[in-house]
Image (cartoon, rainbow, N blue to C red; front, side):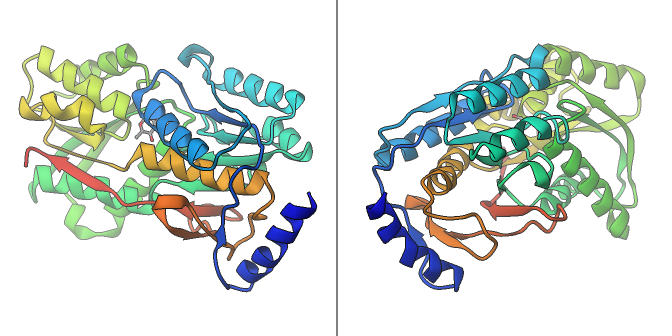
Length: 336
Ligand code: RAM
């Protein structure tokens, strides 16, 4: 302990004064839970791989536990895992949240017990977390989606619908709001007409059926925008099965490995994403540093996240009272 304090104290004060960023001292024993929305979703398997990379690199003799709820039990399942992690006394819980508000009593109890709560991908309310690892800036996501819609539909525009994940997912809800705000803020989007928002719960079958429902309900629908990798891949399959590829255009946030064949078949024209592997790696670094008390999580503190380089904790401009570490960037994917 003395050694940690001696090592960490000068680093902390230097960083708080805007000095040298904290370099992680490896080998600290901390137990961490990586809690995704759904461990069966391939993007979260990628995030787990990234977290495992950091876990090995930092030579943590403690455990990295990857566990999550089933889609049917998405919110209560997460609450249960947070609560049992608190009882067991883990050192940090890294959460991609299925709900913005409902997890907060459980995360608050965890924090009161001294556990670092780091959200990533999908945050909880600021009062329920230490900080959020934002994959990209959430307002920018809205602009990226509006721009993809505009580039596919052109100035002529037309009707489009959004196929989202679960109705409570804070990341998707923020992105949808940001897209609507972007569209309202600039005349160039004036001909993009949002006709509906539906939810496929990040379950392939539900998303598939919701995509078909949209096509049936809106005969003039020109585009489906799916800000979820699960929804996008399922909608592509639905359009392919119905022979509608190219007639109804498809865009959103997608995993390249799942979307490649659909893009080659003309069933999705363009989509965006970031690296989930890196997101898991960065979330792990921040959680390890917090749990081993090498950083305190204050705004202005900087640290080095291994091969990803230097980051600074900042106020989250999209969530009042929230703190974030911003990752980025977006990558755009299309046939080229
Ligand atoms: C799904 C999940 C995840 C989101 C991506 C884009 O995999 O809903 O939270 O970040 O889509």
